Image 1 (cartoon, rainbow, N blue to C red):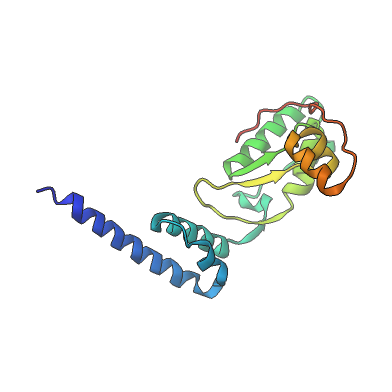
Image 2: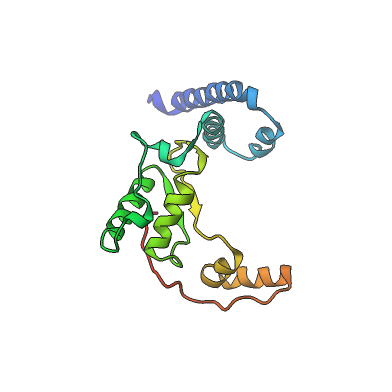
Length: 184
């Protein structure tokens, strides 16, 4: 008789239940009704992953993104970089951000210098929770206004919905001028 099949499943379930109880105990100081209401339809394994990610979020420090790196990431000011240096500096910093699970979205409307400036001015100085949860990333949308999003990134359905909801004329749809293939 293979002892692993029926007993292993029971042991796994017990371990999952024990882990669930431990996670709920650790989340108790942060508890609100959202924990119970959002876990109702989940399997125990998925619920434990969800609770672990919530606990990681609650315990994570909020730091400027530049301080997520050891030593803190220092960038040259955009005006200190010549046109020849800029593409390499931009690729390097995007790679370092991606290594920390920071993914840039909607960048194709920005020139390299504009994107570098957004990273330097907005992203590196922004305080965010430094959460290390496998498979999760901090997504940074590099669009500052609705017109740009509607023009370059919104799908036809999103454009139609926006127009119906706001009763406004939309900017014409266009291809972004700076196609990039950033790490995802």
